[in-house]
Each structure stands twice: as C-alpha cells, then as structure tokens.
Length: 152
Length: 126
Length: 177
Image (tube, rainbow over all chains, first blue to last red; front, top):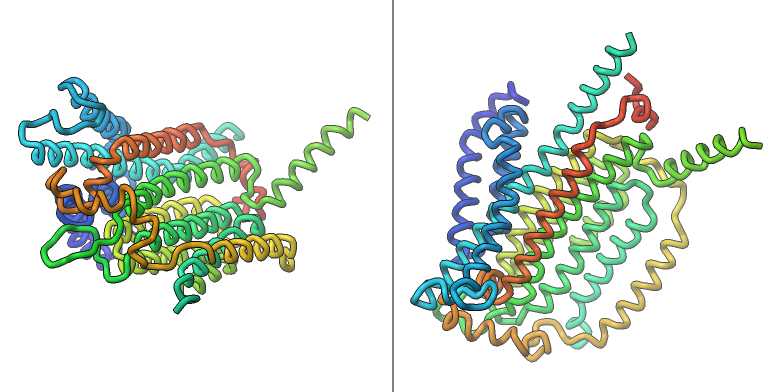
C-alpha cells in the first residue's frame, strides 16, 4: 500500500485530524460526549491507520514498543496514584475533594487526571495488541527462513 | 401500545439468540468470537434501552432541558464495551496459538487431529 | 429491524472477511441506535471500538489463518432447538419487564435520579456520564483499567513466545510453500 498516492495524500490529511480529535475528546470529555476510553481508542486508531499505510517499522519508530509497555503501566499507575493522593491528604481512596481548596475545581482536576490515565492505558494497550498481532506473520517467515537455512 | 412497549426486549432476545446460535453451532473460532460480540451487543442494547426515558435527552447538563435519560447504564456499558474489546483481543491471541499448534482454527478438525494422535500413541503399546 | 438482518448475515456468511466487514456495519448500526437512545458517549465508543479496533484485530488474525470457514454440513438442529427454547423463555420473561421509556421505571429510582439532579452541585461537571464514570464510580473504573492492562499482559504472554516451525502450521489445506 506504500505506493498508492491517493492513500498517502489522504492519510496525510486525515491522521493529524484523527489524533487531534482524540485529544479533543480526551480533554473536553466533561463538557461533551467523550472521555478516556473513547479518546484512547480513537488515538490508537489514528496510529494504526498510519501503520497500515506506512508500514509497521516506521510506525514503531514513532512510538517504540518499549515506550508502549511503559505507557500501559504508567496510565494505571497514574490512576492509582491519584486515588492514593486522596488518602494521603486525609480523604478516602479516590476521593478528589482533598486535592484542592475549591470542591468543584478539585473534582474537575481529579476527573481530568483519572481520565488521562485511562486514556493513556487504553491507547497504548490497543497499539500494543495490534503490534503483537501484526508482527506474528513476519515472525513466522523468519522462523521458516531459519529452519530452511538449517535444513540445507 | 401495550405490546409495543416490549418491542425493544424482543429485538434484544432475537439478537442474543442469533449470537448464541453462532457460538454453539459454528466451528470456526473467529466466527465464534464474532458471534460472542453480537451476543454482547444485545446486552448493551438491553441496558441502554432500559436507561432511556421517552422525551428525555442526552445526560449532559444544559439550558432548557428538563428530563435526562439515566446516565448510570451508559457508564456501565461504556466500560463493558472496552472490556469487551480486551477479551476479544485475548480470544484472538488464543486462536492464533491454537492455529500454530494444530494448523487449524476449526473445532472438528482439531478434534479429529487429537483422536488421530491418541490412536497413534495407543497402537504401538498393543 | 436492520440490526437483526445484519446479525443474521454475520453468522451465515462463510467467507470470514465478508463476515468481519458485516460485523463492522453491525457495530455502526448499533452505534446509531445508541445515539437515538440518548447515549452519546456509548455510541462514540461503540463506533470507535466495534467498527474500528475490533475489525482491525480480526483482520490481523485473518492474515494468519484460513479465510474461508470450513463448511458445516446441514443445520445443527440440536443447537437450533436449544436456541429457540431459550429465546421463547426469555420473551416470556420479558413480559414482566417494565415498559420501554417510562420515567417511573425502577431503573430510574435510587442513585439514577440522584446523579441527574446532584451531579452539577457535587462536581461542577456538565457531562454526567464523565462525572459518574470518573468520580462517583471511580473504583469501578480503576478495576476496569486494570482489566485492560491484564488483557494486554495476556496477549503479550501468548504472542511473545517464539512460533513453531512451518511443519506444524501448513496442515490447514492451505498452499504449502
């Protein structure tokens, strides 16, 4: 697909828009439909489209696999730490009120942080799963080539 | 109108049974996973339609709206959808491993292979 | 309804590629249905997940496996009977369920009405779904994030092992290279 001019040009237009839309529904989630789950999925979809058109190697240069592993854990960790911060400041687990003075601002800050953690986790998990599936085929071929080399 | 009030439940039941049939009657594992997804979506529709209020509106606060639909089922289904895709991913990964071990993702062929191998193992011992 | 037709097609079509595409259509139609039923967030998720990510993942698996489904001779009458009996039971049970769209339904009592009335006063967030998801029921969502994380670990554990050589893979009646 790398040679198809129409796909390349359209992808160049659409992929930034998809990523931007992902960020929009991530951070505008309290006012309109959206939130961490949708944003993560949309963001991952943009990256997967990039991989489908430009190939997996280039896609892994943009977001290396190692970074994905780290991000998967970091998202969940961020969520738990926000919860623990509530405990440390004298509230219950995942209680957002102690975070800031103004209760509304505290709730909003807590919701944004938590949703961001969810978004990071979902996006990197989707990208990771897709990478693992997509790489399996080339791995088969590699193993076959090695087996052929030994057979000769 | 009395009987039309339950129309949404009938659609859910029909979809659910289509998915159920796919899961138990089809041998191909990818098809089984798709059927499981159909089943799952029917449950989503059941929850969402339970949360709907006629004349209500999307649960986002704004001026001039008096009745909102119930946000609680929406939240539950939102998480359920994402968990659903996670289980689909694990199921497909299992299907790939089965394909590598047996060379097929069809139920009956795998069963036939297993029977073959058992026969081969039991023959020399006689 | 249209959904039923598409769902039937998904199960009937033997070409797995076509089934996957039909499944994407099915997801999109159900997303439209969710919009009609006032669930904007859910519709957005269903459209992105069902029609986008699920389809891509199934396609990625289809590049690894046979595309045509192995034909099953005849109909599976036992399965059909089980399905029909279960379905009849469920339809009979649905007669006891509350009517569609009635504001006095038991679902809308308890916490449901509390959320719609008190959300803004408690959190200052207009989107009730986001507020309930991340604030009122945030431990729920935390567990859910861990489920996603565990799924990634599971897929990683299953697919990071070195695949076996070709000999065991080529048996599917596929072209042996």
